[in-house]
Amino acid sequence: MPRIGILCDQDRKREEMIQIVEMLAAKEGFDCIIYALGREADGGCGDTACVILALEDREAAFRCAEKLWRGEPALLIIYVAEQVEDIIAALTMPFFHIVRRFGFEQDLEAAFQKLGKMRMAKTDKIEFTRNGQMMLVPSRDILYAASIRHEISLHLVQGIVQIKETLSQCEDRLKGKGFVRTYTSFLVNMYHIRRLEKEKVLLDNGEQLYVSRRKYPEAKRMFENYVRHLDFI
Image (cartoon, rainbow, N blue to C red):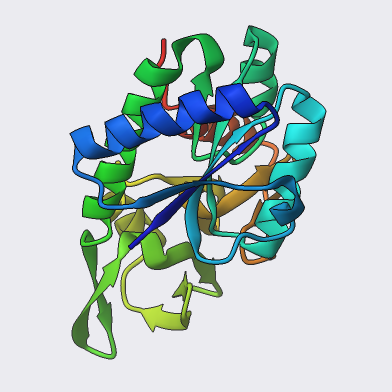
């Protein structure tokens, strides 16, 4: 059963959030355990699948998020923004979702709906050809596709496989599934992007890939939209 931790620096606000999360979990049909997460857990949180991070100090919240990701790179973090400036600053971070403190229930409901879509997306498998045979790969398992010396490889969470498709064919098959070209030779799954910079992209497995100057503006726009998800606007 998945666990949702709430990390908040105010006792009263934490209890209010727990009540709202319990109500929304029941409404959306999530069978989960909801509990208060202590600050001492900011270097890792065991089998927790999702953390709601509500610290008033934005910089402290971001530092806490970085520590959590170092302990568990795939951890989903929902950041609670106190002000508009916090929302803008949070767009540079790979948060699963950003919610407004003053619109917490409404925005969190959108986050839970996205969690539901993500659960369905886990069964979303893409067809590729390997050694003359068809293989089905969950799109979420793909870190990136790379073209090196006319050979195409899928870099998966579990390893690397060579496929017959061209990178353009891969791009067509993965259209609308959260992938972006950061370079002529790289098609990257934005789900696994930790940070996008002008010359490189950092993935949640620690790999760094080159970002071309020509591709950067469009990649930045797509990644910001992916992170933002515009659910509360």
